[in-house]
Image (cartoon, rainbow, N blue to C red; front, side, top):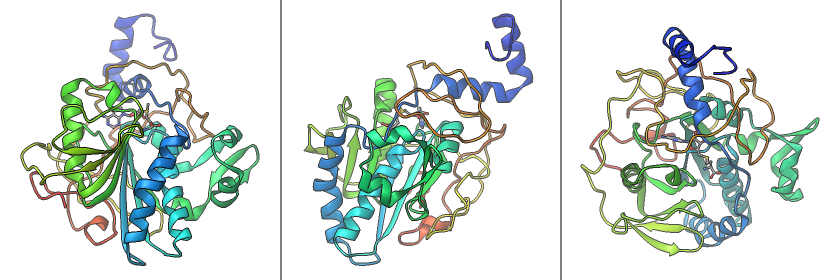
Amino acid sequence: MGLTRAAGLAEYAKLMRQAPGEVTALADDLLIHVTGFFRDPDVWEALREQVVAPLVAAREPGAPVRAWVAACSSGEEAYTLAMLLLEESDRAGKRLDIKVFATDLAERALAHARAGLYPGGIESDVSPERLARFFARDDESYRVRQDLRDRVVFASQNVLQDPPFSRLDIASCRNLLIYLEPEAQQRVLNLLHFGLREGGALFLGSSETVGGAEALFEPADKKARIYRRVGPTRHGTIDFPPARAGGRWDRRPGPGAGRPLAAGGRTGPPHPAGVVHPGGGDGRPGQPRPVPPRRHLAVPPPAPGRAVPGPPGPGPGRGAGGGPGRPAPGGGGR
Ligand SMILES: C[S@@+](CC[C@H](N)C(=O)[O-])C[C@H]1O[C@@H](n2cnc3c(N)ncnc32)[C@H](O)[C@@H]1O
């Protein structure tokens, strides 16, 4: 409100009615974007040992590996997972078709994620070996190298409204549930269960559990918050509104990445439904810039009329190892 120089709430409300972009900017500012590379390093090590290495060992060369990082913020978590998958596939001497779908509600955080440019401070989170392998120095910053960048597909998505991915080997949903009301938490857990293949791994934040959804997930490592999907796909536990028009998928080269899914019928601004913690945030930078790690991000507002990934269709994800592979509303998840 201060940035718009509105004299008071009434004037700010009037401004929001006249400029829909301001509504989106306010919604973005209310979200908390704290994140980092290898956030909670011990649990990432546990994920590598218990999930990533066995998964890579079990796959034939060239086979798809599909992961989803929901609420990816400015991208660090998604790149972290992609680094682990690449490292383990190198270690096993296998080339796999690795695809990490990374989504968030906040367009401005996604803009940073897509740019893949991070400040020198990431040296405290990323080892020199990983910096050398996966990043290129760019003045005082680090830029994600192309082979890592190509593994990650970013898209805007409201996890409370939009369809999930399907046939997933790993779903990481860290530090989102803590901000949600119990009912919304259950909805997200149902969605993650729907998206994961049988035996697929769910990775939550250090203060989160599958409480209330114990029939859907069994603990693999309680301390590390790693769970395995169990039980049949439960049709009818999730419902999707018609997907919105357009699509904001990366258009980067790479298997399966690149084109929006078929357009649906609904458009509208993002809706941070269920998010109960207000955050700070003040600036409105227009261009991607290095992201200060582990701080609340002030990210630029999305263009009005931004859209989320579309509905299922013969898009890149429908084939093995391809893109999103959204299930039809009420349809099969795997
Ligand atoms: C604290 S950050 C977590 C980032 C990362 N997962 C981590 O643990 O480092 C929470 C993220 O959730 C996103 N978020 C909040 N509500 C959401 C929703 N309904 N759908 C998708 N993302 C949402 C926010 O935009 C924010 O980037």
